[in-house]
Structure formats: C-alpha cells, structure tokens
Image (cartoon, rainbow, N blue to C red):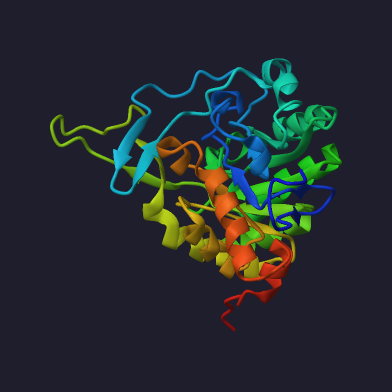
Length: 313
C-alpha cells in the first residue's frame, strides 16, 4: 500500500506470508474484523487473526464471561463461534475487501479435528494463514491441553502441516514448564512461525458475593499486567527456534511493542488494548513508522538488524 507509511514496515514471516506492517490484531479481540468496520483502517495493520473457530458451532461458557482485573481482564468465552462453514460463508466475502491479510485461528479437541480445519481452510484463497491454538482441551489426553507437552504439540502441528500449504503459526500457552521445548517441538513439526503467548490462567472472587466473578470459575488473564511475563516467555521461545516469533501480551503502545522486538520477535499482536481503544494496533503501526523515520532507517527490517537482541548464554 504505497503512501500509507513513510518507511518500509513490511516483514516476511515465511511461506509467502508477507505483512505490510509487523502489527496484527490478536484472535478473540477483533471478532472477525467486521466488528471494527469503519472504526479501524485495516490497511495500516499487518493482519487480523479471526476469533477462534471450531469445526462445529459452540455456544461457549455460561456468563458472566468477562471480569476486570488490575491492569487487565479475565475472560472465559469458551470458543463461542458458529462453526467453520458458517464463518467462511459469512465473513470470507468481507475479508476480500478490508485491505489486509487474514489468518484464521483454529481450535480442536482431537488431532483429526485440527487437520480437517486446516484442510478446509487450505481451499479458501483469501485466508493467507492459520493460527493453531494448542491451548484447547485435548480429549485424547484426558482433558489436558495439547500445548503443555512437546509430543502432543508436535502431533497437532504435524497433522496441520500435512493438511495445508498455507502459513502455519502456532500459538503457545504460557502455563508450561519449559516453553522453549514446546517451541522447538512445533518448529520441528513444520510450523512457519510461533505466536507467544496465550492468556495466563486466573481466578477472581467478587468481594460482595464471595463467589467467582466468572461463570466458568477460571479464565484467561490478559492486558498490561502480564506483559513482563509474556515478554520473558517470548524471549525464551525466540532463543530456542529459527522461525519467526510473534509477541503477544499487554501491548497498548509502541514502547510496549519495542520490548518484544528487543527480545527477538519479528512482529506483535495487539489484543486487550483494542477493547479500550479499537485503533490501538493502527496507532502502534503509525508510531513505529515515525520512530523508524526518526532513526533515519529505511525499513523495519533495518531496524530489527540494528536492534540489540538481548541474549543470555
């Protein structure tokens, strides 16, 4: 999109996924894009990642589903969605005209479900990539998450990789003993990139009722409160793999995003801040453009190459 930015903000995440800017809208926080239509200039955002999709419709968890926490929110939506076919029929025509890249976040209860989701989406040309959420209940492992074991994470990603030629981004869970081992497992299985991280597990009690604030009791914590932990985990993942890592967690302005770039991330996703200001991701992109211009650098890639990548031997 010539003329949108003074600098070249593009980033190549591999397997043909080239973003015009290294800032995306995170899954679950921008719906399917249409919810922000007329509010956000999608042309200034590298990509949107759809709300999580499953093979069949899901009604989600019992309300209340969202609660405010110090410097963040707690949510338990339960992957409410109308199912893959309805999502494609309803939203693919809209995605064709919004002016940015679209990835679809997929969720399954079995390896076979993930593979089927990927196979169907492989035939949808407007979808440029798939984000594989491996933080879902794993029926085959007695309710454990796919993402907490290197072997189960490898099986899911390997099945998805065999089912699609599109870019495969894998979203890692933070609640693991060694995120580097999970990152290496999904890289070995064929992932093109990694997004790190998903929400942290949390529980909040209402001081009046003395009961959980969420109908599901527990939920995912997101927002500025988790950023230092998320940056640390993204750093650990980036050190462990050669594929690009996309940082997620508590980004509400450019300085937040710069933290992720300094620990080796090639792009970022803006999530919870969108609920406060829907234009946050757009502002991060434009502020990054100004920042790079002030440094007299010609491109985001040049900025990454000039940035001190923090390592620990």
